[in-house]
Amino acid sequence: MPSADELLPGYTPITLDTLTAAGVTESGLGYSATALTYQVTVSSIGTNVVLRFEGSLDGTNYFNLDQSNTDTTITANGTYGFCLNGCPINYARLRVVSISGGTPSIATKLRGI
Image (tube, rainbow, N blue to C red):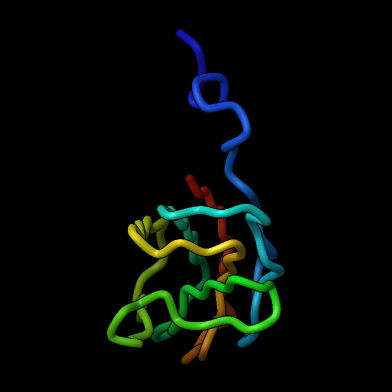
């Protein structure tokens, strides 16, 4: 059976920077996408990490992809999936807004179609 990457050539997941402090990853994609999947793995969490999924049309000006402009709080170690649909963008990244306790590591993979 072919792998998922073989079934969808050109749509392999992009590994973004691993963050250990508030800040942003490099941007991924570089092409028009209307559906995105973020896979976020958090380890060594203390209390929580607050994340923002961001997109851009020009690669310079980024905005929150949540329609209500709400950030996402994670309170436990693990791997989480976030799917966003109907938001045509050319660039995507992850912002760690804040970290509360511990010395977490936030690793992110991104896939867009």
